[in-house]
Image (cartoon, rainbow, N blue to C red; front, top):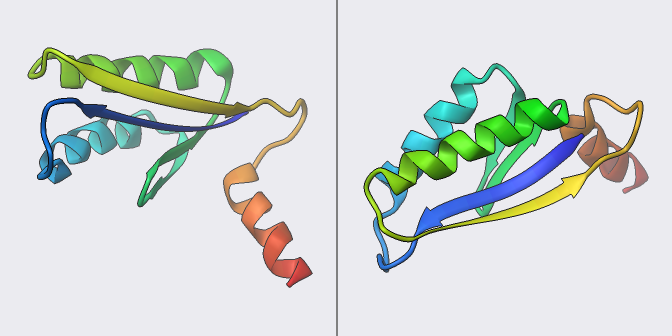
Length: 95
């Protein structure tokens, strides 16, 4: 499955780069295929693997902040892999 998520602390208006870098380190250390975007992170893997990574990211921010929001969008298409690159490649081929 492929998941797009974003997580961030509430109560800060700007300057989240350092916090998000900590989140990205967690995602990177998971070994799952992933891509950082301007609006979130895309991760591909099995349900339990992906949800474990998202939970770790959320809890990481909760260590320093009282309030954290996490949004998750899931595309669970059985039997499909390499979708982070494959979905983009499909659109580019059709252009």
